Amino acid sequence: MLDTTLLVHECFIRFQRLGQLSLNDRHHFLAYAARVIRTVIVDIVRREQSDKRGGADGSVTLDTASSEGLIDDRSNVLEVAEALDSLAAIDPRMASIVEMRFFAGFSDSEIAQILDIGERTVRRDWEKARAFLMVELRR
Image 1 (cartoon, one colour):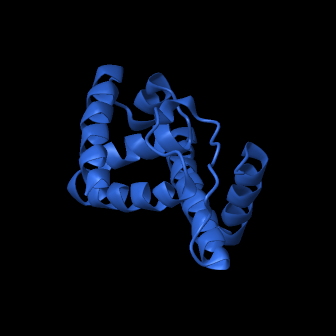
Image 2 (cartoon, helix red, strand yellow):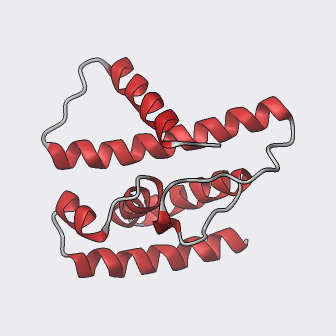
Image 3 (tube, one colour):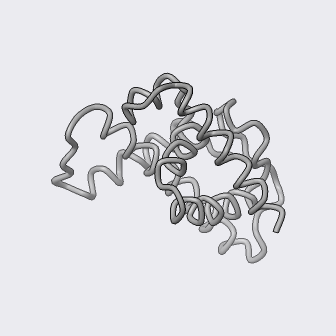
């Protein structure tokens, strides 16, 4: 099970490894933290699947209510990550919104502040991104 403590520890270790991380402000840090959380989750799942040769069959509990059922097991984490990479190639802002909402659990208002956009824009981009990801995941 992936829990908050594990994610915080892994993120802290990655921040420490970077040494001279240059973050402009709180918003930049939070956006970066969301990306790190995503990579930590994906790396953990990849490591577990490679260790078990065939992956984990159990479900993962991420403490983010905002996921709205997009992923419910570890194998889907990798599929979501790949679909998110495809989305980032098309629209980096939408991909950032997904990372912040889905992987880091930020609210629409927090994301709006971090990206310096309106909450309605966040919700609209979230809906577009979610539709894109659903299509990608069905392939």
